[in-house]
Length: 377
Image (tube, rainbow, N blue to C red; front, side, top):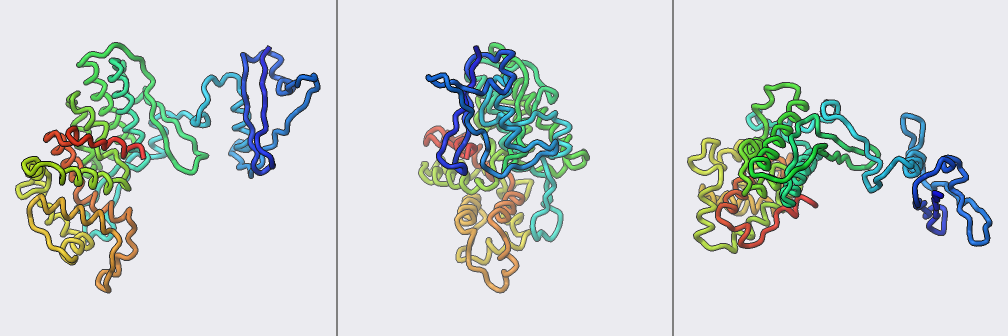
């Protein structure tokens, strides 16, 4: 006969919690309240208190969150329980209309709209990377996913948690991997990302100002190279903004340990050099008053070479907090996030370019630089 044992753990009411263990399959009689009664060795029945000792938060349907969670845990139809068991599944188009995965961003105190960009929201970055991680993990097991599109994407989210962290899940089959099939998985992932942007924007004209690093990722997914799967799933476009400085410093410190020949080759491949059609890095930075001040009004000066671009970024990452003068009093309200966002919007291809250059020189493998670990923080 099915048996459910309810344990009350903890001495006081405020610290106690309820643990529910299910044994066997539920029987018809288990629908009655008596199924939560356990008989001890002396066959004397008792009912442990099931009161939840914290302030309940009512939902729209009138059922408290604690009660809903408890009833959910007792539901015999639930086969799989983990930390995500209170999440709700949403259809993509409905979800992205309500919660866009991209947003328009004007740089703080920017004098013009030259660097206005549509950027990924912070919650969308790990969700999209999760899709690429799923593909990669199946490929590592010599499996590929069958054909999938946006209609096969399910979104799971629990609105009751303090942090908004939706997860993307693909609902499709698997089969033995082939080179063409694995490439097609990345192509289809790129198509899904484009449809997500379309559903979030609503206006096709906004594609013109989509942030450059995400455009770079989409181009890689259009014509994927399987040997570069590491670069695709760990692309800086999918990295949280607060970790951009950590990412750069990990690369920079590794670069300083490499041979001079490798260092020179990396510097030559960096974007925003002398002949870059996107503009020289110093010219771009001088378009914003704060970035100009960091470039010209500090205790050091910078040349025009790409090595100086790295040195500027290194100092920028390490000295976000500094003494301000009366001339720079308006910058005192800048947060670390504001400072990171400014550099991101004015030099969006800086991190992808550095990572690509170090990859081509074999430095990531040579020094066992695990940049992927930053994405899980």
